[in-house]
Image (cartoon, helix red, strand yellow):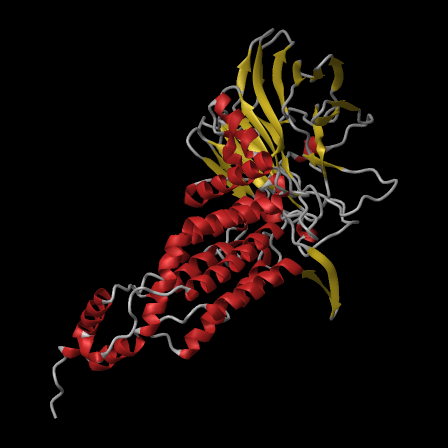
Amino acid sequence: MDRKSIIILAVAVAMYFVLSPVVDRLFPAKPAPANISMPSRSEPAAAHPAAPETAPGSPLPAAARAEPSTPEQILTVSNADLIWHFTSRGGGIKDVDLVRYPAVIREKAVRGSQTKLASLNHNAPLPVLAVTGRDMEENGDFTLTRAGGVIRAERTMSNGLRVVKEFEIGTNYLFKARVRLENTSTQALQVPGHEVVVGTATAIGPLDDPTTMGAFWYNGIKAQNIQDKWFANPTFGCFPGTPRWQYEDGAGNVGWTAVHNQFFALAAIPAHPAPQIVIDKILVPPPDLSGPTNSLSARLTNGYQTALLYPGTNLPPGRNVETAFLFYAGPKEYNRLAQIGQDMGNNLDLIMDFTGVFGFVSKLLLLAMNGLHSLLGLAYGLSIIAITIIIKLVFWPLTNASTKSQKRMQALQPQIKAITDKYKDDAVKRNEKTMEFYKQHKVSPLGGCLPTLLQLPVFIGFYYMLRGAIELRGAHFLWVTDLSKPDTLFMIHAGGMDLPFNLLPLLMGGAMLWQAHLTPPSPGMDPSQQKIMRYMPLMFLVFLYSYPAGLALYWTANNLLTILQTKLTKNLKDPVALTVTPASNPALTRMPKSKK
């Protein structure tokens, strides 16, 4: 494979990872239509009945969604990390606010305004730990009481089945919960199959990325992330396909599940693995759109309601069945999640989605960025630049050798062209003589491509790391107020459209064009191909224009360092002589004379 092919391959791989989120933005999964009917899951172990028994766009039985006549009671409990809002309507957590995190990062605080906090399960149709299913009356009124750090929700149904839920407030974004079904009657009760709702993934603010929302579940070996793309069911992975509205899986092995958005997660860890999991795509009200918005804000109406399915059971008089959970409601911080996962032996840090080669690189980069920030006191923007410099120093010997190899290849072009012309009708002989010539002069056509291939995982790792790093949310750098979002300075009103002016991507594009201008063309590449490769950076500028400012900062710093490195290397004298005459070229001197 020649240098041109490797460059094209590298660009194609990069474009795949860059274009995948772009396609998600251009062809988003459709919102659940108002007239969709979903199958009843009142008996999880049985087959779904043919006749739909659910309300439009909802996994809940229609009869169960009637609102109680009594007013809703809200009980608010808080600690240093979280504010829980318990509701009598369903006897669960209506939503939970994160004390340290605002819903929207604003450049300047508005005097007299109250900061709205980031909230999990916000605008969800059902509270956390709602028990749903046939005859479970999950939307009925519960009685809420509090005793110290324990909140109790209780309801006795007409058949004598009592549903009791207890929540125990903890620390470190953790809290415990129990669901107990008690038979208070004098006869055995057949408890139907039911679901315990974990929560619903919804947007935090109007600038959230809808492609980052979804639900994880862990089967004891690996975690699966069910997102918009699964429900969109695209054809060939790119083009719109037949949408799906419901995901169901598990075989007694659901170790934990979590609903999440770009920076936060609500995870439920059952004391014993749950039988099954179900995730429904539902319509939810969008977040407050009165503040700053972008082109994706109007698409934040999809929610992903997640529940654990439990089979029916026969409950004798005076007996009960209890299910216990540990919940995590907080930021997607790798160190915190990794510590909890290590203590419990359940790999909870997989919520970060750091899997595969690129995930491993993302994890290393995140640890390095946090290490530089905490140990040296560097701001996160400076930490990104410092990591870029370190990576350049690590790759310096390889890049230096690559640049020298490119210079030699340029100097040897007349001789290589002579070989090509001489054996133009014999491809095997031409390749043999060319490789012999390369070996004699100690050059390799792959020398200029290896640094690009090795740095590709770093770029993709940086992309995934910066896309979800909670540490960058609200982090400032020069004019950038939030490194996790585009650095929009102002909006340009043109042709009825509002176009954001993002400065960092423009600087990145200029640096890429400068770098492309300094890079010598590949041997044998025709002028049209040279122009395509030279202006390829403009495509990256278009694709990366609306991506996080942290990624544009890394790529800009990387390009500027590469330019400096190229200029330094070009000024160094190559100890290997570059002047080659035909007489000193064995590949040419041994050429047979052409017959006249």
